[in-house]
Length: 146
Image (cartoon, rainbow, N blue to C red):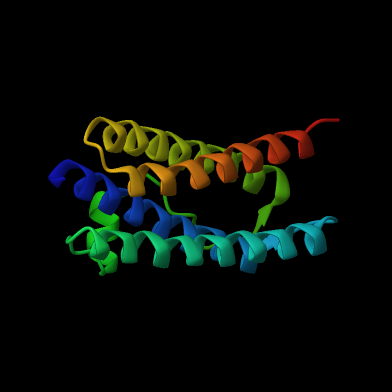
């Protein structure tokens, strides 16, 4: 269980940094597709915020303690923060694809570990997340097609 809790806390850290990154992009997006991307980014960060709460509560339900400070998140995360500057949608979409892919690999790894350890609640939670991220990555890639 210790390894699952550690991996869930790393995932929680990634989610928290990704949340802030999405919000940063939401505030700083520019260009002709501003309105569409601005709204989509808000949708994404609202969903990630819900997942932050779900994962943190799951850690508590397993008897662990979720990380809770920005310092802890930044020490654990694999997600690179966004710079606080104006950005265009192409860069934003590519970054989001990369970050969702990182989160997807985290979820797959956690699922495999949970299955090995017979922790099926964690496995089921990751199933939902894997399905969600796989679809988002596909849709984001489709949006980049010409």
